[in-house]
Image (cartoon, rainbow, N blue to C red; front, top):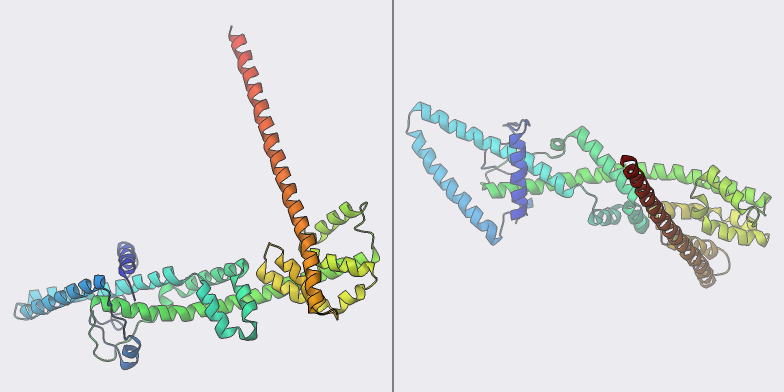
Length: 381
């Protein structure tokens, strides 16, 4: 149900439409007049749609008084001459235009308020369509990339369909007299339901695109990781102190600047297995890598928990047991935390050095400026 702030905003939108070049004369067959009639099905859906707040009761009373006064004026007009009847028709036309105008304003208000993909939308969609993968679906839909895809899909479709194309006007069936405020609530409820259906369609289309995009990128990632690991098997000394810099540069050039950082837990396990001549175990459990890449693509967490998860996933599938797998994951977490802390400290040291260098440059420029001014003064003398 609409509150006072909502009604104020709808009025603002209506004024913008009225002042623009939008044609809001509309279709008179769909909207007859301000006393709209609705069939039993719609009427049953709208129970409780009329306002009950004290602030809005006053507006309802004012609207009722206006309706009574309009009826009295209408009766007086019937006894007057023909020119006056034409004025009455003008008033009816204005009333019809106002209804269409506010219908347009309501549509735009619904889009403004409900177009964003909210946590409630994600929760509801995952509950309805997630099946046994609700958690993974929620993670995917909460990712920044999915929201980008959804927003692009929503914008494209609403531009092609048109804001007015997704909101069918309720058709009149039988008498049900409504005040203007009740009319706003009735149409608002109807438009919200229509928009919800449209929004779910956009989520479905966005999910299809997102899954296709993810599958393609994970295939490329799998190919890159397997290619690098096979190279590692043939050249086990690539991470020696003498070769480390070249290895990082070559991997960055071939697979991307973040490849080594992104694949750190994979290399952590593989290095250990390779040193024990057990690298075959990794390739035997390659499905763990694919599952983890899917989770990583959806979550994109930067705290390190996704990296820790891979270690736990990998060792949980081996015969060592869940408890030992948890210990191995915690050991990795300790190593990773130390690396992250060292990286953070290194970045802070670099930042401090840059600030100091910048301060030195500014000081040198000041001295140069002072020397230049002194030379100019000497030249003038």
